[in-house]
Length: 341
Image 1: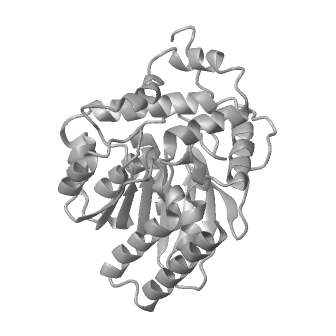
Image 2 (image 1 turned 45 degrees about the horizontal axis):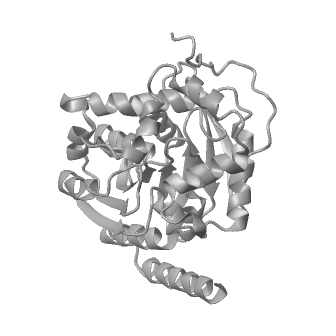
Image 3 (image 1 turned 45 degrees about the vertical axis):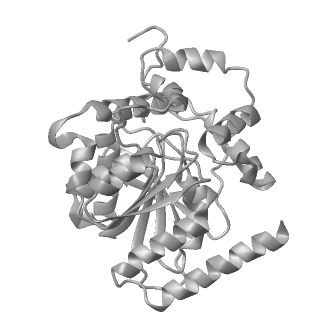
């Protein structure tokens, strides 16, 4: 190991007391213990019993909070949950230190098997998009539909703005970065993340910004933060180099579930040009392109993404009157925002 590389922090390490994770109104958090991992799961109780289950998986450096807005939009459509991957959000590191795409996919599969809620409508963003693609390919019995928002699937020509994230995978880089950014405030870090991930950071409300700063301050107290980031980034890079049946594009070809693909025209991490390739690769796909969105369309345009998810579910015959009611609610919410601006 390089002297500048962060050491692995096992899950058995005594963790410091940090600020509790934020829980939005109407949400619940619970901890689920599974072999080798403990996962924190965020849920939003459905408006009525009998709605189909859904599970959301966040991207690199994110958490289940990234799905709060979309889960609220879909609360009358699905019984929604979002998981904190091992080492992210409020989930401690995995016992074996495995942050590979396969390791994260194994965690999602274990949770789905243990919960007994499958098959589910599975949603993934960025790293979570690669993870859920693997889950859908390997365990079609657990997946009803697949929704991918800017999935981290291999690109031959990586965008220049995505290079720093990829460099985290190199030995020693994380240590250098932590020293270089040691004097940055939580506000400065959040502004940097928003500039990288949002098509228009100005869309973030003052309250949303304050919540993001609070979460950043909490994360910076975690001793395993950069270990999880570094090893997960390395997992993405390693997955990009795999060929044969383990390659992510090859596994995308094997996905049987109806798939919704969402790509942002201002995405600085996943090339917008990959949208067409993805639409050709997933055998039962439909494509939603949002020219003004960045890397996290489900946070920037939750109403638009929710409508597309509803249409996907409607194609499966799982929505009848619900689709109209949700569309009306989305339209009403959009009108209210316009009136207040």
